[in-house]
Length: 216
Image 1: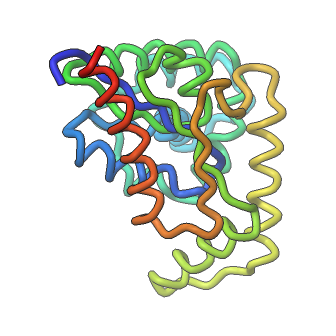
Image 2 (image 1 turned 180 degrees about the horizontal axis):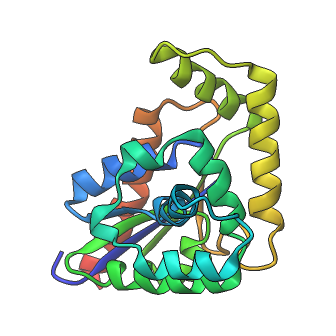
């Protein structure tokens, strides 16, 4: 690939888009950004400084200070941080600050795979490939439960499911950049699909676009 190539991956929490994004970035040798971590970084800063999540000014300041090269997934993946992130993500000013950082990242050669909630619709509307990865709320809750149990934790399926439904409602219902498939996105429903099958399906879509581009 001699030009900047962008793959935009959107979808709700737990659909498998993060794992898919990592596999695709590795396969096509592209930069990778989980844009959700940028919102988590803002939320984490507020939590660390004991600031209320509805302090928009503090959230804006935290957003300006986010360094995409220093996003610590281990720290930012905490459940409480994720819950807080979906609350600060509704602020349009915070989104604008972070979207600019995300767009700059996408322009860095040789290109990037970005996953999040508004990549194909807002961050990179001209992305070469747009994928919308989804799965039923029940399947996503079961996956989350299995993930927690795999590291020796315990959780209640009903609570996890309710949490996922609440987060979906927040993400899809916000006025600014709601979660929705881009008009030209390829839909991948992973409800009954293992990650390997999802990866192969996504690869087929991408390779088809690359082949047509090479012939043009």
